[in-house]
Length: 453
Image (tube, rainbow, N blue to C red; front, side):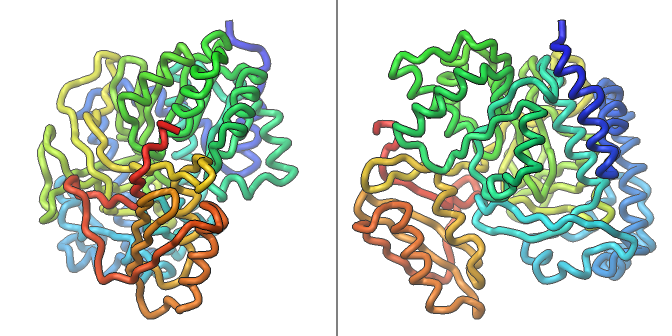
């Protein structure tokens, strides 16, 4: 039997909040609950109808896209088949930066300013409207309910983004209390902090846990090492996202929490792309997302082969994301899922790996603790952080004319505050940074085995 308080939050309080915000989340989620069972042909027909609306609105109202669609052989944004989407050139972070204002719809209002967390090394400022927010929240809500939990169930969130952590004002604190959400900051993972995290989890007895797989697996390992049980709390599922989930992390979390791990894939820019169901399938949010995989030449790759993830988000009329290159690498799966949902599957996601780093005193920190120091500095186009030892860390920077010499000192000081004043921080400005064999950059590389500390 469902918790009466959870029913109150999910059935009344959360819908009221969304309505007051002008979001259409409840309707969208209900429609998604139905459409997830449609056959693929019906889902593709929905995609085509929504793509037509997106392109025609972009042609009429978005200055950036008018000439592009004409030049692509799609006059007035008219499209007859999904395959014609390939005529539209790719959208990149660099293009968004250069055309940010021209990418806003003339009909848009009440846009929210967003930026990526920077784990890709290329922070991005963009704008989204209420339609996009409603659809992303609805997609996440639907996937949450697959696992027998709902908004209002006790939840622990292990997160490190200052975008969220900086929003902990009184209203947000009150909201988290009502929704029974407990936030644990994932920046510092010292033994003392891990003790505190385990204490909080044991006190909260969460029905679900959400966060970085690396952070949650470290908490699980710490609890197991010190004989602190987390398998008797009634936790039904651990949702992980924002990084690549490794097999050893899944095994550790499932063993210690005695519940399944549900992997999720998405981003602030690309949206809620895919989520794992209880049958194991990594389902793409097909109602909102057209996902293509392309090779190094930009050509479509077939299911079973790896390619870069390219996203068209169908609920982004206010600031269109059309054929957006994410930089992630993935593989499509042709097989249907045994759960019976018609939503297509990702077989493998090869991107999104962010390492831990160690301070000179042995404190374990999420790699994002260093990424955030660099990400908003003007003139930084790309970077890589390599922790060679406890005493020495190297930073490679690809910069442009907006980068000033004083920023080198700011980075050095910021790193020393995190890693220790005695750590040598070597900063080199380079012309280019090579990619990994997978085609993805690795922005934080630690030569130290953090798991052994």
